[in-house]
Image (tube, rainbow, N blue to C red; front, side, top):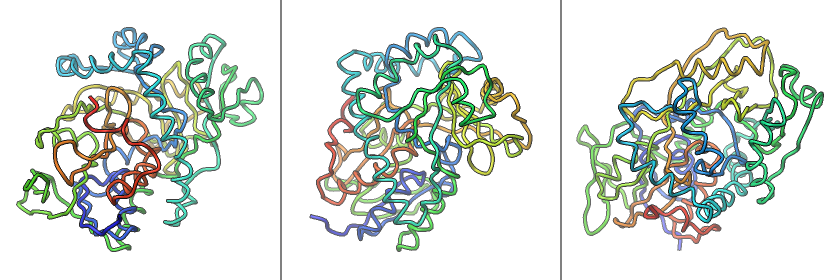
Length: 415
């Protein structure tokens, strides 16, 4: 039964803000808590992609078998800072455990279930908030220089075929008919028509925050210092400045920072930051309709935020280490191989924290330890993709309505 509650949501990225809108619309009284304002974390600098074809686990053999080579290459797509390696060992052991064939099938299915819902849920959200103009009409092109590169990515295509996701294999001139700026070195591509993009992910979050406030929701600026717990449940979120935010129910949706809060609540979760970098190019000298990815080079380019955004690297170094913007420069160098006429002018660089579990599947769950506490975190590279679906499913769960998807695979105590 859906009864009105006072709800505190910690974290105003795209996950927390979208959920706040959903719950406020349902008649709850929602307080959204954020340190620096909506959309200023990972949601500010993501690659703006609704990437419904990218749900497969990172622990599949085609990926992890390449990791030793990648880790030895200073310009490889995955970089682990040596000083952080000892802290990563437990996470990596769980990552390897998620590579068993039977486990991979289970994880693929958990991701596919969510991705099949994405456009239905996102379309409803954008229509309700008057933001349909922010979703592109074009898809994404996956690029291959030769047949060997295409065969190396074949497991990805086979998973999509198994779960029924749309794609079209293109060759030769058909590729450049779609994107004339691409190099002729690309001999094959796969078009993912449903992998559309957002005009500006930061502006999407701020627009959702404005809609949330227009519905009567409250945004509170402050840093979480702890929680008041009584009678088996979380009764208040306590901020470092001494304020206590009382609530009937509390949702932790603070991305990678959720790990520290969960640990303080006696419910540790193996959540790590996959630090991502981008370069925003505001005077690129070319135009693009589609986003592009080049799996062999491990980068992505998206037309967004008034220019062209280049990103795609993963760095494992924890929350507190200073950015290493050489990672951003590597992806720009790769992008120039695909887009030889790209001009790198009027640029800015950014680093953010993608919250990643070792099995690639998010947590969307009630706490297993505390009554009236919920988690919505660990969406990895698919936070923007999953946001509307997360809001629909978590909105049902928190409101006492049976969600249309079995949430067992996303429970917090699965590890």
